Amino acid sequence: MKNIVELNHPLITHKLAILRDKNTGTKEFRELANEIGTFLCYEAMKDASLEETIIETPIAKINTGILNEDKYAFVPILRAGMGFVDGVINVIPNAKIGHIGMYRDENTFKPVNYFFKVPKDIEKREVIILDPMLATGGSALDAIELLKEKGVKKIKFLCMIAAPEGLEAVTKVYPDVKIYCAHIDDHLNENKYIVPGLGDAGDRIFGTK
Ligand code: PRP
Ligand code: URA
Image 1 (cartoon, helix red, strand yellow):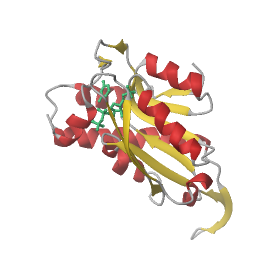
Image 2 (spheres, protein in one colour; image 1 turned 45 degrees about the vertical axis):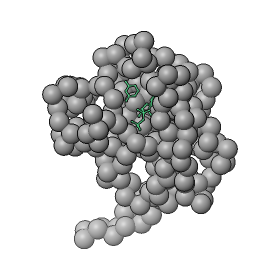
Image 3 (cartoon, rainbow, N blue to C red; image 1 turned 90 degrees about the vertical axis):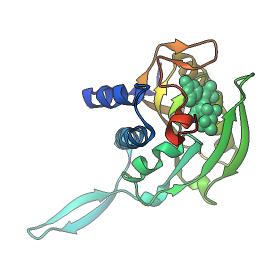
Image 4 (cartoon, rainbow, N blue to C red; image 1 turned 180 degrees about the vertical axis):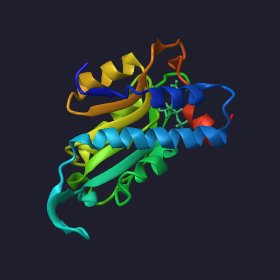
């Protein structure tokens, strides 16, 4: 599938292995989620354009480039997307942050929207959506639609684990949205959980179960 980047690195496999382990506790889970978030964001910034600048080092003058951090916004999907925010903010500390609140209905598996608050000038920014899990793709599709309605032109989606079903659903509707995931897992089970996955990301980040 086009426009999907899967991080392929032994360190990511190592960190994901610990994260997936059902015996890993909340503190370590949060730390690992943020670390993986940093790597995902680093990868997602590979195509960033820089503004030319001249810098004087203690030794010489050079023509180099700097990132205009005012061109970016992170938008975590609540709750679990919050588990990434510290990690991505390490990479672009001055980016603005919006929030989209949604949860998956337990019976229909469709997302229910309950909150939407984004920076006023969101349409001028590249938006990086954060959500650890891309399962059916329903939450991602709704989040992208809400941001497009606000006039956002460039959207990227960062997740830790994606299911092939969700990737197909999102890329079919929004081929322009580039998806970065730490790993593409096997399939969804009858409850639309990712297999092997890591369970319920929100519950594991916040210790609610
Ligand atoms: C999880 C996850 C995604 C969504 C993915 O959220 O964080 O937002 O499910 O599933 P989908 O691709 O099938 O839409 P959840 O509903 O568990 O809410 P929470 O983050 O508040 O726990
Ligand atoms: N949401 C989760 O938190 N985990 C899954 O496997 C699917 C949806």
